[in-house]
Length: 179
Image (cartoon, rainbow, N blue to C red):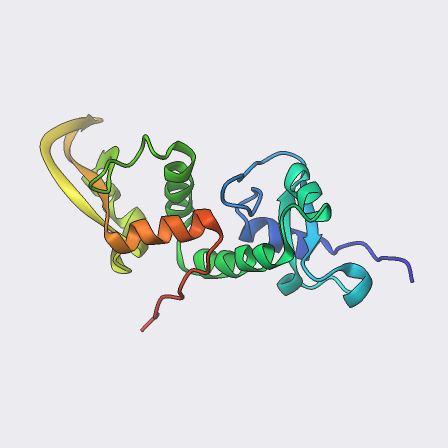
């Protein structure tokens, strides 16, 4: 049986789930993205969203050579499902930025060295609502057009630091109660 092509709709869904980046949080590369079957194609003989993940060529080769184990890939896939179903692209990019720049981006008190206009609070509402971050308000304003906006800084709670560590290390992220 020859392997059929992966449907364009499935490709788009997988790429969207991974944010058009390698799904391995310590990599998150954006070039040479490839589609990986978690349970091998020769065993399942089908392309299913639940059994596929996006990897860069380097990480894909590491999975093929068993340097990265399939159990880890399953955890990464599970974490993607939880995070992409819950958080905005901006929230994802914040987590990626912190991981890409850690430890420089977060101090010993969990404070992120980033400031935003106060009006950007809504952008990160999901992470705030779930208790992963809180905002620190600054009195000094920054000019935005003709108006002056107060600034906010992001502080990761202990729960937020644990989320970052779990995400980075490929540990299972606990699903947030949507209630």
